[in-house]
Image (tube, rainbow, N blue to C red; front, side, top):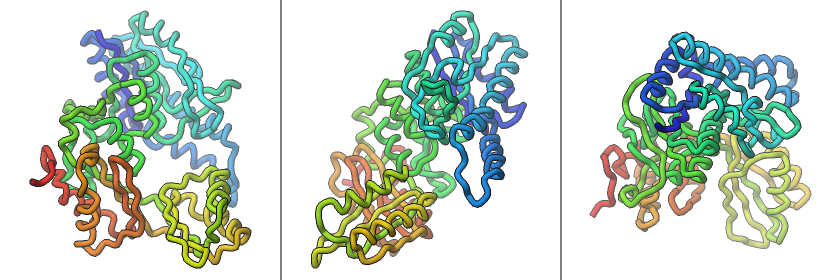
Length: 414
């Protein structure tokens, strides 16, 4: 007997028929002799509907109370877990649904983007001992003061993996509307290939660079507690992609996948005084507003001044410009320029550790298509380039071809 955690996203429970389909899948797993915990998102579109209601109360983009936003959007999962538990019961199996606060998914108090601190698994274990299928609301928890919290977009993935870790489950299955993890977005590149396996580190890089299959924190949990994640479709029986510890076979592929992110904006500060503490003043002011800075490039100093360029999420672009403009007046910089028409394209693969020419191949492939590289960032297993956003899809396809990712095993050319 195995302990299996299954997570179903909003599209998988988007209608009564789809909820019945999930119920049948869950029951099939239980009748194979396994204990089953199901983590469920709100029905497709429900969270957006609730947020739109809230936005109608916020004239002139006034910020809403985040505590109350969490109370509002957490209600979506309450509907889906109850319906799924009832569907399971009508099909002859016992089920029990729990909200985040009922199983004590304890989080910090960062409303709308809370982080899980620990999970009290006693009620789940008791329900399993009573031979029930346990249905848990994803995306939500409770802080130490008893306030409802939510984990941010994609938070149900994190809920599922955290529960799997807390109960030492044998596997966490993430069911979605795609049948696995691909070498890149199949909607952009028709030759994209589904991966049978991918390492935690590669998946973390792909997720952080724009791939939307799994939330980053869910992969972090899985890696920390060595929980295998099986990403698969809720609409077919085909095998998906296993996210797991890396092995030597994985290293044979130079590049495993390509990610892109169009939610990027670039800010350049010209004529920054080249003295200690200036960069700290700029980025501390940005960080205090909760804005995440991604890539940073500083030019070589000339005449005791330099240019500083960095990227931020496009949603934070205007706020960032306002903050930086104010700081620049204080530090005596010349001017600030911004560009919202950029995108980031990244190649990822643990095989890069042992291959020296990966970056040069990437740059050469983009150059052949006259795609100008504006910024570059690297890590041990990733190379990212900022390019003009109109070239995003072309860049992805060119790089997919360059590294022959449509092949079963893309190895370095002899």
